[in-house]
Length: 224
Image (cartoon, rainbow, N blue to C red; front, side):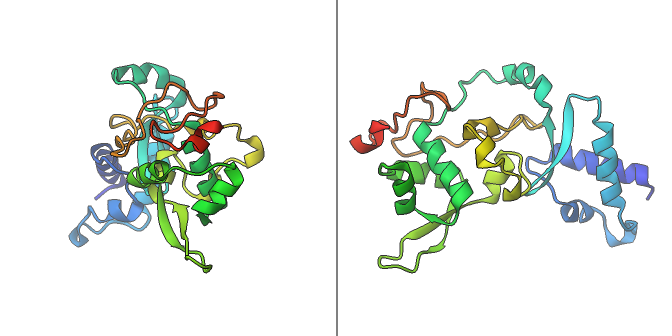
């Protein structure tokens, strides 16, 4: 099989998949009888990335593999295809997520110590339901509190290959700046609607001074 055909197959697989694909997954598309040349998938990916130079989409590598996504300069127009109201996150949710991302592993108590207010169980629950955070262990202290860390899904959503690509805290004014680009197959999977009391849409956009938490949040959380 020649390289042109291999590149076409890789491109078709990436466009057809709803999830990023790793080179090993792409290589597995070819049977042993087809004698895939060494490095053929890597060459196909490189060729496809170069071919996107002047297009409205780009082929990028994230934590879970490679995917096509809409370029930032055309994002505002493509976003008009989706008329539903965009999900906005409370400042408390963004602050909690940022602390977990930058200081993991971290306990809920340590998050509360930094923020100066209690952390609603609904915030932790909604971040876990969105598969952005998970329990990665327990602190070896009385009570053995859970240690939280981010997931591969978190990296994929924000278009990152690893935590090393997070912007330095000195340069990050608001985690909302990490808003990902729309994926080519219809946009990044919108965060699932939480089943807890936390509303999926908030009137205060990330970065505003409003710090209202969930509708049922404890009063101490609404002081910020």
